[in-house]
Image (tube, rainbow, N blue to C red; front, side, top):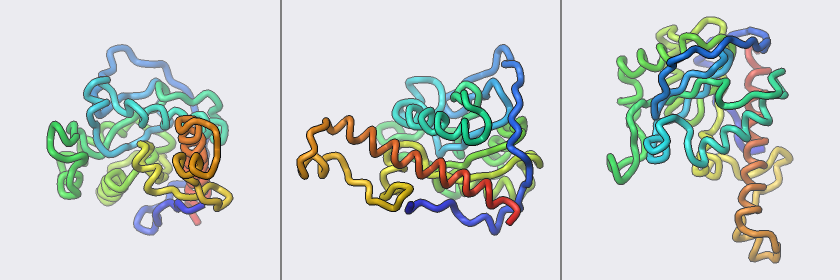
Length: 228
């Protein structure tokens, strides 16, 4: 497979067992376009920033990003002893809290300098302070924020850290070009040109599943390598 988790040399290892526990959901927990607190404290995902679909939905990881995230959780959960892992269980936040998309702000994400701002890193640390076991940082901006969190010792001491591509369609398609067996992932229109009769939508879904399998294996490898 092509995607590899970024080096953890600059991030000190956290050696904890993936023993996941449940907590009761709290009433009145705020959900914002960039942040939602899960009903359980074990797992968090950090994405890049909320966009058009998150603005409409009023919660993070909307649209295709949310669909892909749930498909990722469906595959990851059983591998970390949580077979019914769903997005309501996990905390989802973003490296940058402001809504960004071309028609609104003229861009699709924050600058590195904005992500690194002390007030932004403090905000992210506060949103992750309850997480007990695993934080997955998705995409380049989330990785940048992670480096700042670690530099300032702002993550809970018990959590493991893992990296993945952003689960949005663009992030998956640009970062993963072969499956877990190193076979090229052929795009839908090309497969149709070669004579495949299934619809473009069916083929695209299959290709997304192949890419998500790569992410799951990369995450598991990243967790297994902690402490090496």
